[in-house]
Length: 71
Image (cartoon, rainbow, N blue to C red; front, top):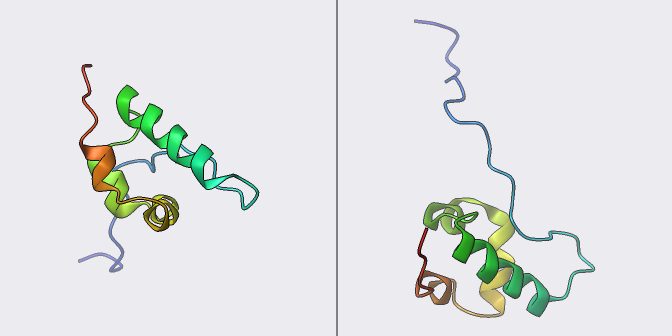
């Protein structure tokens, strides 16, 4: 039944915040808030994209989930 590898079903989504080491954590958090408001970060991105894990050292990611989005 094939070669054992699963096909990629969804193209990878770009990370919505700066990921370089020089970025200020507060600036990254502000980028994440704005991107979440605009819908560029989905709830599952916070769980599955390792780029957002660095934000957990600054504040709980659940704070982003409390932001009201109207799109």
